[in-house]
Image (cartoon, rainbow, N blue to C red; front, side):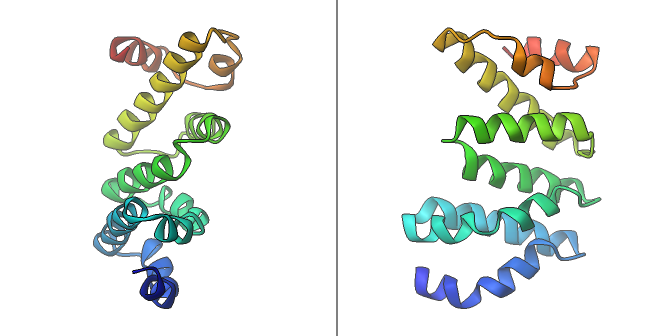
Length: 143
């Protein structure tokens, strides 16, 4: 429950950025499950966003993947937050995990689909991202 989570929060935050990929990955997956459990737990997990963002810099591909999943869970109801997430990771080119890159393309495709559905085809979002030609081809294929 949320009271127990508050008591172990410090240890979970340390585990999120642990040097061991297995520990970090397990902490990220656990945080994802806790986020979905109830509102109290979700509020606590939202406070770990800086550690989760730091985990995306891990050399371990699975850690990057799970960190991207958790960041999406936290920001999925915030359109501006999602745009910043996609723009940040497409410009930094720090994601080396193919699975994390696929998630990034999925999130980009979702944002673009939402823009088209709402009639806001401004093009500013596409100009803010820094995909290569192959990245745009992959994005187009996923739509």
